[in-house]
Length: 333
Image (cartoon, rainbow, N blue to C red; front, side, top):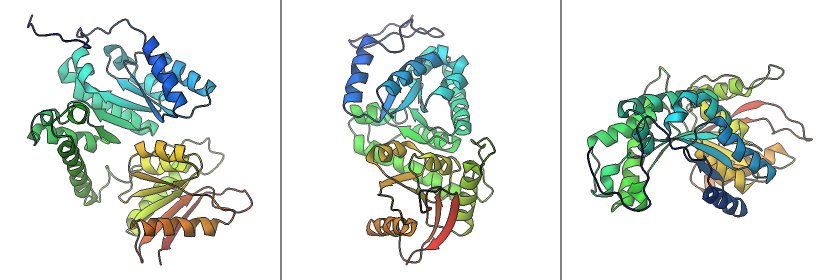
């Protein structure tokens, strides 16, 4: 046994075993009720062991009329054999590698991370890779080369987000750590954009419809491929519920996705999805008016310039309250 100092507000892990505690404690329920009262957008559920843990919280949210997203934190040995079942009922996943690595063999952590990202890509749900990404920058102003490689690999695997923890919560160089993480991500994206063979960008996804209508997944992939072929500056999505934004994000376009939606709550929830920048707009009965105001808003923010090619994806840009799936290519004036 290697001894050490155990301070307050810490817990003890036994490798290969999970603590026999409820997924949601009384203190958790108190925090959840506070979140509901204050319109919190995301709930990260710790130490999920079974899909029923997630269902219980989602049922409560439904009863409260809350549309917040439930993110399951995979940090328990008991969760690993039930990954797909847990992920199917969750809105997203956080790979909490610190506690996970204390409960399963440390050499298995990157393999489980890779499996989680792959399953969630198939489910079109976001994955956050977290913990120890830039651990050395809690104390030092520059990262190790291994940490930079770790971030790079998470992005190349297809993670929607990478997350800092102690680096920004209590580290000496929070801004520098965030800058490093952003720079590493942008470097990966720039390198991958030069690869025309696919695999990272323009990913085909499975249909989520029953065949009675044109599947959004096919339309989204067509829009993403078209955006590449016309060298579009952006894909603009008009969405009332966020579904089309999810689909386009899952296909991984090379250009930014600007998702226009009707309310602030949905706008915030869309921020977790890969490549999506969300904006609020009032949808007009005249679709052309909605497009014009959206382009003006993007131009005013410096996100579009005159002469840019833009691909538009929507199932709501039809007058008289009728919907139709559509893809357009426009050039900004």
